[in-house]
Length: 363
Image 1: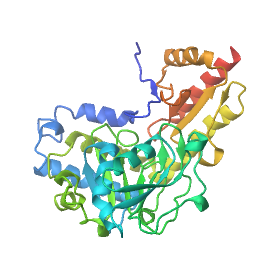
Image 2: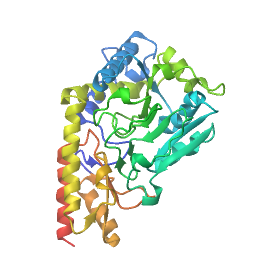
Image 3: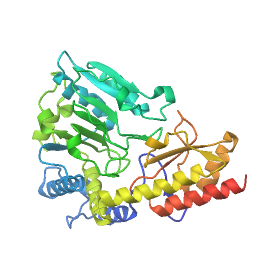
Image 4: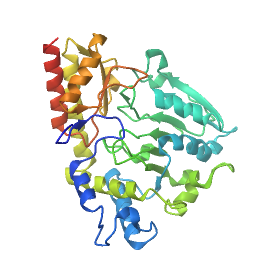
């Protein structure tokens, strides 16, 4: 048991800024002098609508989202959007519903499988042959002339692979940015759609965000449920049904926190420093190693392994005793994973690095 905050390296739901949690706790019973919490007020009432509008405005400011894009606050997570995307966009294909996919990990594979229920999900490139430790060279992508869009996962949470540059394609680029949204500067105009769950880099589970170019609205398949029809959601301010009000409120607090830190560009510098420290420790070690190609190592999810796997359990247990929690890798790939999202302070990475060095000295 701990009498202090631990350093939580979980991939999601993930750590949140301490000052955000304290503010939420202070406002739990009496939000804005209403004598009740934000979870208890009407989502269509003036108090919550003001919260919603401010949260939306702050996100637009942080990401420099132009008016030509709609921003939707939805539910269902990225997995839900894996169905919504083909239903909304595949009808734009020339010769029947079709989309191209560049698969760089488990989440890309899930996207292909879901999209195949609604049309042709063409795998234009995949790094499965490397164990998803790299990103296929774009010159080798086999993109279709008749696809409606090109789908990527900009950061693969499980394998720790991240696109360091946004690929340039002729069709609308659709990107799952669940785990690196707001961690680095994106030019929104490079994308047709950005989408993701909030529970990694924004707030608690329950909220998913879709940023979609407005000319891509209004093409949904007839079978599309209303809650997945982006045009209908845009028309109703994402309130066809009751939205995840508390998750929106907390996301708004995180957006304010990000602005106080200096915005996305400032956070990107911190994230580069944090990930560089951890990767340099791994690369200079005789015990730890990374399988991910250096050209596409994730800044958010640093995956690594112990060269002697017999030490895995002792390493995880020792870390937990020091308050370094949830560093065990995903069961599908093994090893270790340190998720160092925006809310993970440099002190947390430094503590992990010191523990790694201490553990290695004891081996």
